[in-house]
Image 1 (cartoon, rainbow, N blue to C red):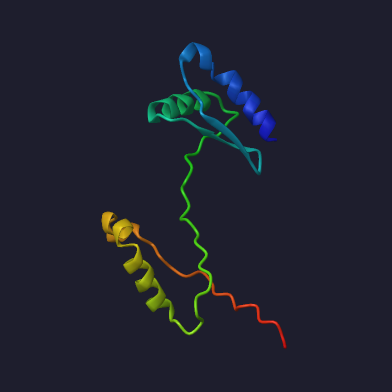
Image 2: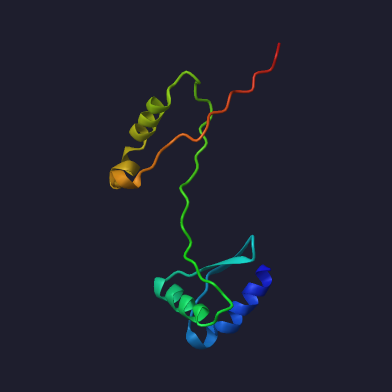
Length: 117
């Protein structure tokens, strides 16, 4: 379980002696734990300590793309027109990012709830 993983990690890492500052520890499913630090070198030190033993496996977290819900959008608007409108409205955000880093797509559309009269 996640509690066991946390205990094993605490045994490997002596935070007080090594001067490592752990900002957050979050439990996940499948006996996984996410450890967060403010500085990259501290994360590398934690990774080095945890990989010394064979009992724990260390992976770097891959960030997921954010999911945005748009409400009150007409159904007759096509997907490509909606994506163009989103990019136009958010030029200052999209302007800073390279084209390869901007992945904007529509996952699904939901019909509006219409009550029968």
